[in-house]
Image 1 (cartoon, rainbow, N blue to C red):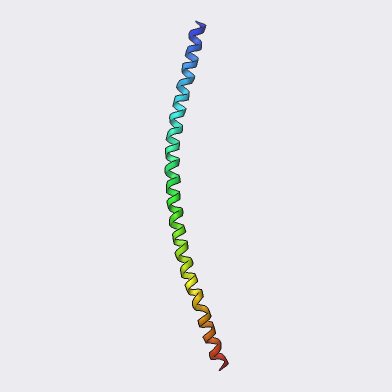
Image 2 (tube, helix red, strand yellow):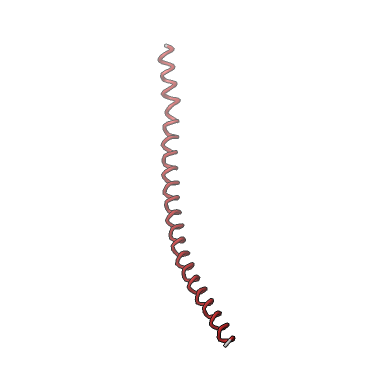
Length: 76
């Protein structure tokens, strides 16, 4: 009777471990999908940031010309 009880306890624990393992596997799949989605979003944002920086740099390159022209007109 004691051995049967121990076997039942072990079997019950193994079943609980298997259920928990399956839950962890499902959670891992969901988290992996979320990581992939966030990585794509990050890459998109980095690309947009690079494009915005390029536009700002282009505008900054034009500023000295405009500022220089304004100073020359004011001093003449």
